[in-house]
Amino acid sequence: MANPIIEVKNYSYKYDGSDVIVLKDLSFTINEGDFVGIVGCNKAGKSTLCKSLVGILPFVAGGSWSGEIIVDGKSLNETRGSGVTDVIGIVFQDAESQFTQQTVEDEIAFAMCNFGYSRELMIERVKFAAEACGLSSMYDRSPYHLSGGQQQRLAVASILALQPRVIILDESTSQLDPIGRDEVFRLVRELHRQGKTIIMVDHNIEMLAEYADKILVLHEGELVAYDESHKVFTNKELLNRHSVRVPQVTDAALGLKETYTGNSGTPITLKEAEEYFAGLKGRGDQHE
Amino acid sequence: MSETVIRTENLVHVYPRGEVKALKGVNLEIKKDDVVSIIGQNGSGKTTLVRHFNGLLKPTSGKVYLFDEDTEGQSVAEMSRRCGYVFQNPNHQIFTTKVIEELEVGPRNFNFTAAEMKESIERVVELMDLKDILEQHPMTLDYTTKKIVTIASVLAFKPEVLILDEPTGGLDEVGRQMLTRIINMMHDEGHTVIMISHDMDYVAENSSRVIVMCQGEVLDDNVPEKIFLNSEVLEKAQVEPPQITQLDLFLSAGKNEETILSVEKFINKYNAKRGGNN
Image 1 (cartoon, rainbow over the protein chains, first blue to last red):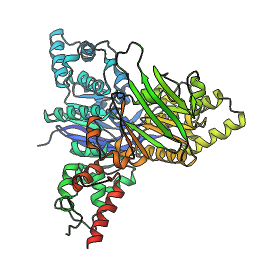
Image 2: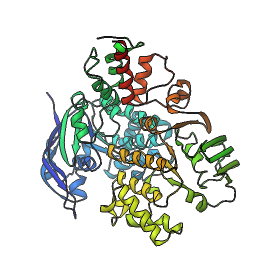
Image 3: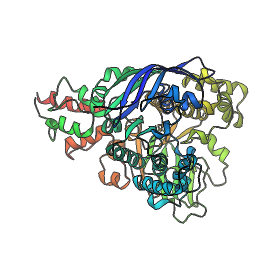
Image 4: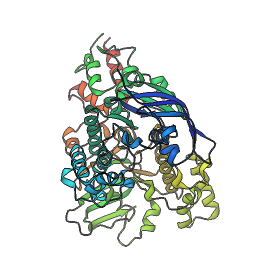
């Protein structure tokens, strides 16, 4: 039985001093253990949604809202966001801007210090988080002297130390080179395998198609789709209407639909495409 | 034969207190009608290389020629007037408190007349759809819009060469399409575009030439259709071809002379095959 960890009910949000309703009557549920990719173009409300899920909006940074968000059974309207960090951790696009400490070790421990963890527990958790994120050999390094991929992994480690059940990554890979990007995706996949719920905002459609189970599409504050990755990423008409691409291999399969029928369903990953297009392999004289 | 805009001769760069050569004797010629992408992993020397083109860095040894003039002794102002450079991180570039002021910085510093400045700014505002945000503080904008503003602020002083460091990072589909329009416009107006990018889908579809760098050296320099066939070089530079290229390479099992770089070409190729044999 699926256990809802985040329930969003008729949630709308507007920033102070603006007339624009940034999120419009959103309702959806994320179950524990899901890997949800959030896509949408600029101004879709993706970051606003992420900040709302952890209560930064509206309870810390203000704004007006209606509806409610329930995290692990507790309505944020009642808790005013307090305690949500026990359940959800969030990593932002520019990891560097969230660092405050001189060493990797202190950076991982920083949030725990603020929450008043005991020294013994902090040491244990720093070790756990550093190992999980491949940072064990870098305790004394300055966060500012790490590569982009290492910085993002450090940002993940510093929230992982709090042992949240849900991790939100808001465009964490968009500034990284392919090596750094793969490091982050691999880490996230491993955390997902260990049972964490992952919510990932990313423009890299091909990577999300490979990693996420479900895709949520936002457009100008409205939820336009929320379904299994396969169903969403093969719906080219819907995605294009909202300025989101489908994966290249999906686009190719849909484009050749009239003349080529693959052995399997429409592919959304390279591996699936290799199977789907196997009939065209090595020669151009294949017939259906 | 297209005019040479940038030429390097045995360009070497060592950072102060650095022990390794960030550039190890690079010899390159960039032509006027090139839309050239420089690819390679972090630390391969891409940014170090292009920062010599506008004078932000000076060669440790070797030469850089801009429009056939030796750049030794030229100021950053002189060079950057001709080679406009858009930083990877817009937060490193923005320093005024209004978008309109940000757009005016270049033209004002480069002594545009009031009329020239007005004309130039109106053009980029129109081109990049900025009219609604001119009075806003740039730092309050979302990342994509900030990035668009930094590109606009460079275009505003009409450089002959446009250098874009990771232009697609953080851009959504609409932003990417706008970027493509700008690159095409620069090219059509006879200007040169140089971009550094990790975004292979974008590089494949939007470059006339690709330079692969690794550890301060140029590993390969060719048209994208050939670059993405060279698996040995790509592996060494730790670069992965676009997904559609990988699929084409898999299906053609190494028999290609040129590879497919876009979905459209993939569909044409495999459609044509079927049509030709039916």
